[in-house]
Length: 290
Image (cartoon, rainbow, N blue to C red; front, side, top):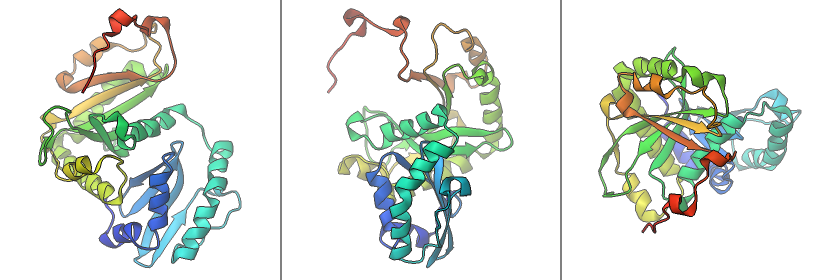
């Protein structure tokens, strides 16, 4: 189960690892994900650090040797060893850019996390909890999270678990995304309650670490939210990033035939522009939102 032991969590909050947490909170180009008693920190969607608890006093850092490019990282046992890592973060970032495997799709995944979790002025209704979540042998969901409707928000509400699949540009996988989502649905159907419970636990630990940047009253209410264990409440969200609207690669009718089609939502975004997607002022219907 994805979860940090209490000792690991406490050390990240107030112990000698806390500078790492503070850096992730301050540097919103970094993304921290909780695994099974280890964590990953990502930059541009690529792993910048994997940190595993060997004991409450010793944490083992792993960075791919190609990305380290000669940088030596001893186990983290005190503030000095953590400070050594902190000083090398800019060099590791540079090595990821120069030597890593660039992918705009995984970069967009990280930007989606930032836009919804760490930009309080957005006040969005979706929050991302985890990344690259396994759906058994069927594959992995790109993101998981929750939907907290803007209207009628209050403490103690039960919210739906959301599972996101991100497709960038004319990714050839888009033509078979209906079968992909079907495989994922069948893979999690029998363990929906377990997945919701695990995601709720990760959500609470991330809130403890301060990884959601929102007003204090909203954060306090978020701590009381509960995830529905019923798969019929789940949302399956296809995010099409920079998808060419003139393309016929994506077949909406195939998604409509799925047994859980009523739970599927489609979001289109990105920065590539086509005239077909533009709206006039009249079409935009720009009404004020309170």
